[in-house]
Length: 113
Image 1: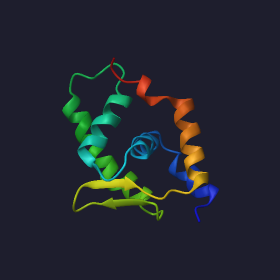
Image 2: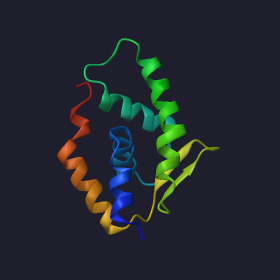
Image 3: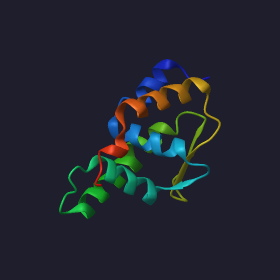
């Protein structure tokens, strides 16, 4: 069972929240490249000139910090060798917090139109 402290820790970083929001919407494994593209769009308002540099920075940050952190809970599976991640079988408590946080933050309204 996931504790509230764990949920709040997972949601404490904006980039990790964005990853969780996107993963939560998807059924099945999500390629890291797809996840990074979405996060870059949500973070980038207005879009930067050198988006490849931003893309690479997000990849490194996710792979070395945020994805391993999220995979500490049993309902998030990160397969680094296959470069995919998914949320599966999340508890209702987690679902409620992610849903509310996304409604409040609305990251999809941050990116380019």
